Length: 233
Image 1 (cartoon, rainbow, N blue to C red):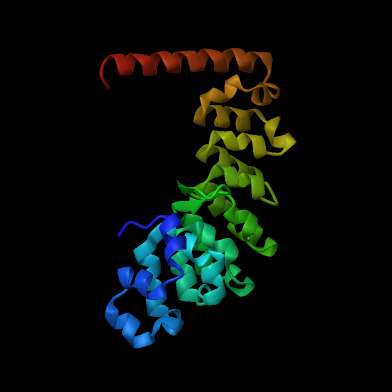
Image 2 (cartoon, helix red, strand yellow):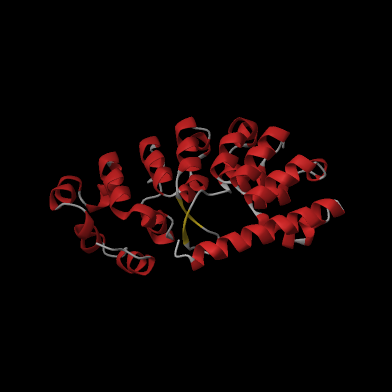
């Protein structure tokens, strides 16, 4: 069954009709509708069934009012964050510090953006939502998953910044001023994304010689890519 946000919200009012579509009649008979989500196995089944759309259901105000503790179980929270990392910031404080849950959220390859759209990729904002005292512990993993997570790194060491721009050259914008003025940092960022030479924010930190070199290198690479396209590769 394919479930979208609209159908979830429309059908929440009738639990029996809605949940009969995704749960077995045995589950509904055994637990009853009112206590359906008191059982961890039922919750995990629903998370797996709805996948990335689970967040649309568990955050709907009517559903939250009826099942306010549906994310309080650590196993359910872990599975939820491994399915859609945006669930992480909605967990209780004690679960936000759970190592397994943090790792699952950082490594998850799907999230819900600020506009409510489901995206494929690693969520750069997980590091922002992790308790501040744990920022340094998970900063390196966060930037390895998504270089732009450098935006939320409290202590931007050269090692972490280098890892970030090797993953995503655009992370250069989040480097410290001292790092932006380091030629190796600029060269690494350009190597990962040569379109940076078109940005004034990048060129500001480059010497005239670097600009000439990077423009020449980009032109060479663009020509090479065009040749590959023309040859059918």
